[in-house]
Image (cartoon, rainbow, N blue to C red):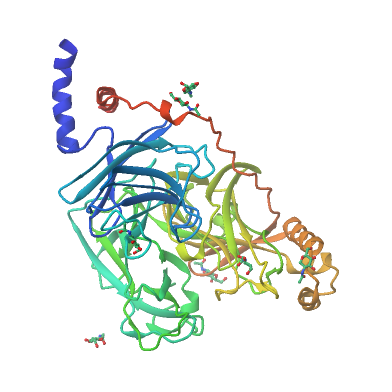
Length: 573
Ligand SMILES: *[C@@H]1O[C@H](CO)[C@@H](O)[C@H](O)[C@H]1NC(C)=O
Ligand SMILES: *[C@@H]1O[C@H](CO)[C@@H](O)[C@H](O)[C@H]1NC(C)=O
Ligand SMILES: *[C@@H]1O[C@H](CO)[C@@H](O)[C@H](O)[C@H]1NC(C)=O
Ligand SMILES: *[C@@H]1O[C@H](CO)[C@@H](O)[C@H](O)[C@H]1NC(C)=O
Ligand SMILES: *[C@@H]1O[C@H](CO)[C@@H](O)[C@H](O)[C@H]1NC(C)=O
Ligand SMILES: *[C@@H]1O[C@H](CO)[C@@H](O)[C@H](O)[C@H]1NC(C)=O
Ligand SMILES: *[C@@H]1O[C@H](CO)[C@@H](O)[C@H](O)[C@H]1NC(C)=O
């Protein structure tokens, strides 16, 4: 009795904090759609290795929910349930294409309750965090693309359903900040008539509205008008040498090609980007002198004529400055036309090294560490996997980021879930795996979607005046090692070569073993150049999987969860 009495005020306080209708076993919640029709609540226990979900959807038909490697249907782990004329149905499935997902042989999701009332279906279920079935998706401490779909009736047909995707870090959830003192500005195209070309990059160099003092941007939202044609967009800050607004096709003008300090990015499938509470992107307080370059990639496969576009980004800013300025650093393989990827291979590896020990050579005020909180991994069409290794004193200490299912159609900033610290002196290795099995000719490094890149954009704080930290193989040594007299002869040789497995392996080995040029650039495009080697990247440790009988998963009592909450609160207070 005494203990209960003591706990009462805490319980009351808890219910005020959480709101009356929050289930303590499901402390997290997020709408998966923009119309607030699909609400996901969840909670988990890392020790017991289970995660519980409650999906509420405004429909009396079927509901589907799942985990997708790249945001699409294919390869997704899906549950479908509902209350039909014959009662409750609920199945664990997996999709192998854009059609009805197949039933898993092993049913690993456990239904806890399924109700239909007031035009709403509520499905509550649980599963292991890890997956011990090849058809289930393991949930890890990185964001996962959640997909949902629902129908008006219990007839599960593919067409005319409502569906969508949202990336959520289930195990490291960061709720959206609510700032009282905030405002926004938009940087967009203005009435741009989209050309009928398949691939078109438009660049607009412009100013932001005049801001009397320094503010911090804390949230960036996409404003996309032609969803079917806008593929991705990037915003760069220009150096002080760029003073005139311009607008033209990208990489044709003089001034715009100087603006290379990435500020923000959005890609198909992406949503809003929220900065961590300790950092913001600085804007204003510069007499409005700074120019920004908005680059939009239009993908007009059907050559539609006459579409007018005003797409861009919305920047929410606040005068309540956060502790640190945030910035973006481009790392990986330098984008150089002399870089060549052979055809006829399903897993060609390219590497780029960032050596942060060179930072002090290009900026006068190097801070101690880079605290990285988010990354954008970037290749073009041939990219299949990207991994970013983190090295200290020659030893790999972490994989900073990894995408084993890279998809050009779904690229966006991915929150790391926690802040990772790169000390000045550490090295980063960006590894890209390409598939060129159906290409007949060489793939060159470059800006077109049919060229290739291998980059990781790191969002970090405190901001330093850096723009890039990249490398590329020494072309002279490469030519020599490949038996050519000079670089021109080498390139001719590459074009004529018969690219069978032996030739490809030999070339890949040479590329990774020879000396690299390591380049670090500041925002004024001054660079430091050094030489070095590519360190060996270790594979990610395998997720150990203890096979459990799914019906053994116990449902913790509400009492136990409450007690855990209270213990946590006591420790925190
Ligand atoms: C379900 O939908 C399909 C396709 O529209 C239709 O052929 C079928 O008759 C429907 N089944 C029921 C039970 O309504
Ligand atoms: C863009 O086009 C719309 C519709 O034609 C027009 O009302 C608007 O004034 C135009 N905006 C600019 C900046 O030209
Ligand atoms: C290459 O072509 C084959 C046959 O058309 C196809 O199955 C495969 O998916 C293609 N590979 C890539 C990487 O596009
Ligand atoms: C592709 O590689 C295979 C395996 O080494 C080889 O037999 C074939 O000749 C190559 N094809 C081309 C077009 O180079
Ligand atoms: C960039 O380099 C130029 C010439 O080497 C030098 O005059 C200038 O001060 C440098 N700027 C910065 C910001 O380091
Ligand atoms: C689950 O239950 C089965 C049968 O009751 C038992 O054999 C098995 O050891 C249990 N597994 C775990 C992980 O507790
Ligand atoms: C799982 O456990 C349940 C009871 O706990 C048992 O009936 C069932 O046979 C078990 N299944 C397997 C595959 O061990």
